[in-house]
Length: 407
Image (tube, rainbow, N blue to C red; front, side, top):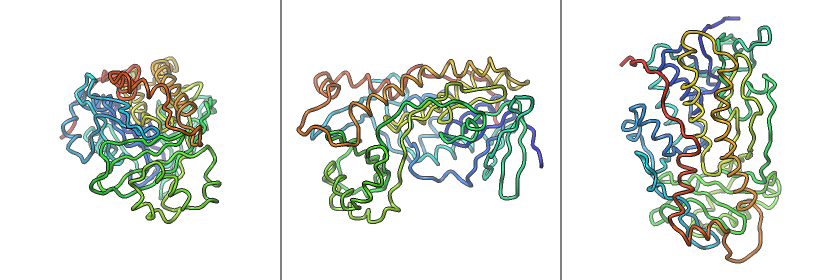
């Protein structure tokens, strides 16, 4: 089997993997990122770029160029709760360079960082390389086996970073234990056309435990409809007209276009999970991002939490990894740094799912959850969820070394 030797192999070219690869290459570490697909163009992925991530881009000197890419900016997140309009978060109160969430297709974000990373000679991106196993030597992870259209090959490295998502080969083959927190919902994702005159700056429609999310994509909405966990077959039995009526009941202005959802192939199921690994690492292997902690779509924070993991990984490991292997104690510092923020955000998501959004019909009427009433009574409190969602607990800053890129 052909072999490639490098200092670090990153499994997965998603946000966590690509940001880690960029930062390690920026520090002069030989790094190879393995992505199993031929491109990044996959729909219904996390597309929210929060102020914390935009702040990192500013620190890297990339913000102005990044914001030239097509995107939408949202300074407030507004919701309709049982017919009442409520400002849930107000990012204008944040002390950051960008006081908004940017909505951008994830493939544009990934292509941007791939292009920047390629400016460093120590960076390599291997598309259509699916990792199928880990390589073990004397109980240590010494690399990965991958397959591409030409066959199989081995990548040997001092460190393997698993950034291959919630169904990761890395954490599965490493035998890591997963702690499931449980969540009572799944979500259906679809496209619904957007038209002139539609309400502006609306994000969520809540009614009696049900939720419809609409993300503005200029000429269409990326729409998410919450259903009870495992409830997809029951909804399919009731038929598309039933689903259409459920959506229109939450957002009546969609009535004149909902018929375009005329086939189940236009609707994708997202199985919502909230879990985390008890241990994120072993000798030669570190898991970060969704591979270490699967997040629900609530708050759109998963991508940004993954990017924070990437920054912490580079901050703690890059200098030492440039010259040789890192120890298990070094890897454990990453988990120690990032596990507490993960626990805080996951606790918030579990609360939201169990107390506010269940996907099931609850008591009728126009009553509002207590926290929504508090936001109505005390508008300044919208800055608190803005801080938690937009910045998050224990935000990271760029501390890893930097080389001058090839231009």
